[in-house]
Length: 459
Image (cartoon, rainbow, N blue to C red):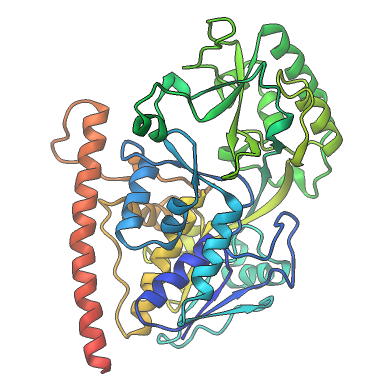
């Protein structure tokens, strides 16, 4: 039996992959027995921050990562596809239906036993046939975090992360806000209906004066108190909106408030700045503010965000909040197979292992699950080809410089280029994606052959 600690995206994906290979799993999740500061339910794989899994086309590296995960039978991708909501070229989900689908799938899997309890000590991982996966995520409990610190020494790192606010759809002023995707991209529903693009985002346009007032209010608003803030940095890929605002008056206009590719139908012109809202559930009655993770006090959030045109009477489903994320210095701790260098029967996965993003976290869980299942069968875990997005991510995590290490999203720059790449960025990316999927298919065929041989030996 394989023990997995943590029922987030990485832990649930790992459990699914292990069970699919005929190995029993004990999955430990502390919620709802021990709640966290940001989770709202006891469901497995509950999404805390955005409901978006980002781009879903092969022209994006994260789109390739999703395609590879689908090729390997990912549960996260299967449930995400079944609960998706409109988001242009991105894959966004109804967060409640997604968590419910993930929970139901694992509760129905006979080889998975779910234990609702807090694990305060790292389970013994001395027997290669009984490996352990730690996938407790960015909100690892204090007791287990102390155990990890003792295990990896001062390589344990922290950063603060922030959550975006969500508003009720019927409190958004439809006379001001317009629906559109950047550059008029057509949605899948539009294409099927044979109609013009309508867009998947709600856009709140700001003119120069409105933007200046909003920016001034934002940098003057009161923030919630943080412990140890001075010595614990934010992750650059998920900065609070007010931190970006303090970097310069135009930082937001070239970041989450950029108006590029949008035309306000009321004026026929591109706005000076735009606040975008993305559908957060299938009923389309909740919308989240894109890129608006924040540490402002809740009263200040209501005051400042209601200065945005179209949000003057906004009612908030949830305010933004700040919380501590935990991750290790992966290059000094992990192998390419997500095993600890010092304890090969112990795997680390998810954001705890030094990746950033929902998809990357689930992908690390998938790979840790494959490796743990192989180890339990008496086989050596096999790294994925570095020419794939999965393999490139694993290589980065285990081979990057440990100096000032920060978690990363998948990027085409992590994948080795071809010897004779075609000209043009689109053509190069298409060639990399084609090679990655072919190499992964060959790797999977070899792995399925190894699975069959191992099963024959056992029988």
